[in-house]
Length: 186
Image (cartoon, rainbow, N blue to C red; front, side, top):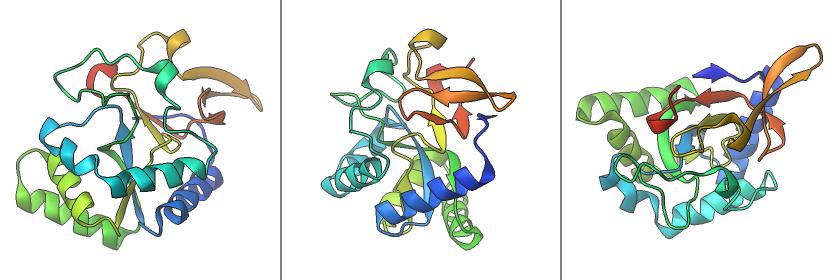
């Protein structure tokens, strides 16, 4: 996980806007291009999650296919992309929210054992009122199944106000965090 350079106030404003657009879910989890483990895919592709994704993206002026120009679905085994590719699957490498909600999620994942990401997905999709995803990669962009070359990626390094930041060309914002995961690890 790398800090892209967004400020604390921007992080908090973005978090609150995602919570509002989701209908009040206070745990915001990272998202990614492919479902991992694959067995949770059916949980994540229901109509209610699609409706929530559209609402969250609309709050930031993004469309469902915002990631399409930057996608390289080369990993068909671990976290394959949807068809068409959409940034809509839970990745719990990033979680933000109130401590009491985080405790409930973590207690469930630890008690269940097994694949932690799969257990986090099961918790969130059975507690949809508590969890939502960062469908625009605004707080944290997970790099699995994105094109690897910097020029083809949605990310670029820019200099602003005397410092270097990671800028997300797709969202046209300074990226808060970048998560190198799956085939998107450096």
